Image 1 (cartoon, rainbow, N blue to C red):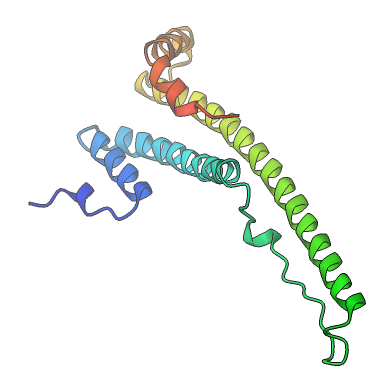
Image 2: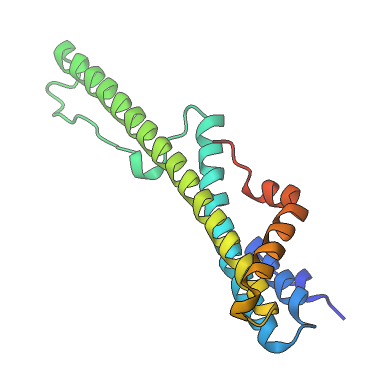
Length: 173
């Protein structure tokens, strides 16, 4: 039999399949909830990691200009002036202006992308915290008298898994 995770074509599909397989043996209501919470986190991680890869691309390739910042402007003229020194000077000036404009746009897109990574990381922390707490409450049957117990389990869970959680939340920003 072929393992269904081997048939996953994307990292996202593989992550969702792994999540599904992790909860399949649980009671169906709990499995559904944990699967939903896990999928929410997987999607948020995917968004953040995609933005982080874009930041890495900017930092590793100084010549990279994203499509949104590319401008193909060329000064055109008739054959009568295409060899004129003034025209050639204008072509050079326009090319220089265009290059500077694209690099300025590139820098703005890079900074915006870094802000996205920071915001996504913040959102992941909130999702993770909310989802861990909700999962614990669900396992404790959400009894209001057990709120203190829920808080203790939450702190204990976070302390036990702080290393892997920090790896998930790690960024270069």
